[in-house]
Amino acid sequence: MIHRLMYIERKTGYSDDGPAWIGYVKTSKSKKTIYFNDHAFQKYIGTYSNYIDIENGDEYWISGCKKQESNRHWAGHGKIMIDRRAIDEYLSLIGEKQLPLNLFEVIDLEDKFPIERVRSILNCSK
Picture 1 (tube, rainbow, N blue to C red):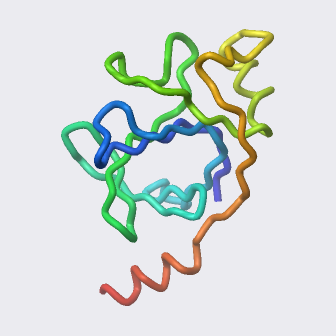
Picture 2 (cartoon, rainbow, N blue to C red):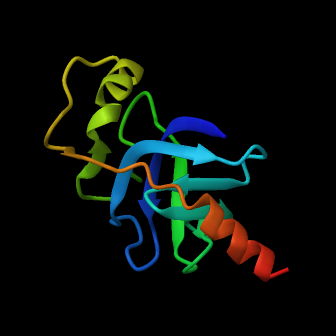
C-alpha cells in the first residue's frame, strides 16, 4: 500500500463548491483504488471528476496537492479541510511557514481505509 498526501473534492451535487480535504490516502499497489476517510475510489472519466466512490457512485476530483495557487478549481469556493497531521508536510510542499486559515479548516481525520469491506463488495460483483 502506498500512503501519500492528496487533495480530495466531492463533485456530486456541488460542482466546484463541494467539501474538500487534504489528507493522507492509501492506494492499492496498482494505484487504481484510493482509500480515504472510510471511502474507496476508483478511476473514472467524468465531466468534472476523475474518481468515483465504489460504494455510492458519488463523483470526486482527486489529485496530488498543488505547490502553487489553490487546489480548488478557479470557480470553486469554500474552505479546504486539512488533516492536522498533514499540515507540516503541506507547508513544506508549498514553501510557506503558516497555513492561511482563511482558506483552510484544520480537522482531525481518522485513518479509516475500508480495504477488506471494498474487496468483498468488488468480489461479489464479479
